[in-house]
Length: 423
Image (tube, rainbow, N blue to C red):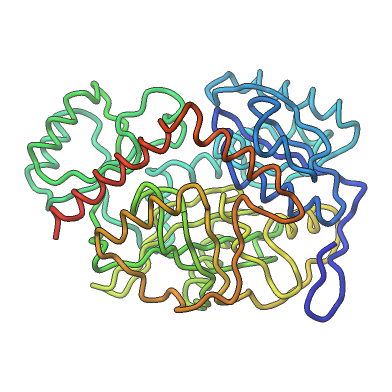
């Protein structure tokens, strides 16, 4: 049971379980483990969809049961809905759904009618999560509602890529237009910095007749800061819990998953996020990535993840509420205790922060808003009351042999060379 600083407990409904919903093969997912622990510590029965019986999530002492269901994320929606309903029948009572990837969030939103009897989830416009998860959809929503995002182009052919290259200011950034293509054959392997016109055209030749990419303005890391917002909104799009923090390191460097972050109060950013969510009418948990451009003093929205973010456990208020707890409390009709966020608290993802640290030191990048000293630390994997997920992560991370670690080292070396070349 979580207890706030005044000594009052966070009272969750222990008769309503939670189900971690994820599709695809990514067993080393610390966000799911964090959600299992967060609600499990309140006495909420927790269930999870896992790739196999030996994932870190499946080993948590707070997990009541793992439903082993290998998926790719590219299955037909009807098959995934039927699988969820089958799991719901095995749980035997309505459970709060906690999606940890875009595929799950979109599926739940688009099939609310079929899932409503077996599960609890926030009401949302069925088309909105898919649009938010799309780079093009998000860019259009930002333009509609006056939220700044990096300038971008969405070429529909190789000829349009050539026309863009003729007038673009390099470097530029290429990303996959739709979140779901990472399960299939993506045009680019994640966020890709392209230094020259020639490099862009060489890459574009392999993108096919309909390039599924977004070509985006490059925001120089030397003139930018990476910020994150995690929040939970009720059915009226009012914030139940809203937190702001700064990203110190990510993996891959400057373009990937958060490896090290701090809670930093930022009322301006909190207001921007709350207004945007109210304007678009979203409800539920969100994970936002923004880059503050010191050249023009503006926050530019890069990603809007309509689901629980992997690093959500960075954020908790003084009443012991994080976004997953806020979601469960709200959907079960319980009040969500208010409180200030834990400013100065930090979050470290142990298996990726070391290679990220080495890469960032080589590049010379620092985050001005990171506190000189943390007020407390939350580790993604290691927890004294739940050690097995950490040990399971280690066993899978280094298997087979040191191959995974070697790949991380190679990627860090490539990142450091790229950073040096752009100085």
